[in-house]
Image 1 (cartoon, rainbow, N blue to C red):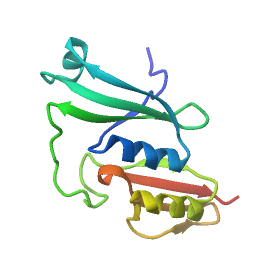
Image 2: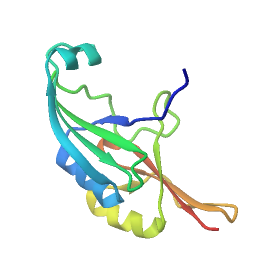
Image 3: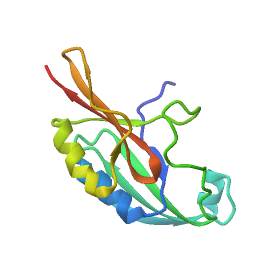
Length: 146
């Protein structure tokens, strides 16, 4: 059997409300919030005493989701600096197609977004950039030009 689809990408955050606000401002829709704990959560995560609040946000087309999780227990582990470069093993980015790159950046700046580099033009096809979102996650934005 082959993979049917990618269901979601999980991001652990310290401030769940701020992360939700960031991704909603990006244009995603809050699908729901829940509290997760108990044997199911422990078994799935491989952790003991798992208790977290989660929020699911989805793209407007309904095909892609992010699961944002704030751990109550065990406490989230700080993996070091949140301004790590793009080429760290195991760390990359989440990319979104947007209709107006510069407007999107301007709307996200009040939510803590910072450009990693600069807005770059790929031939006559795309404007692209990376910015840091909640918890230092690199968020890619792509505006198709043609």
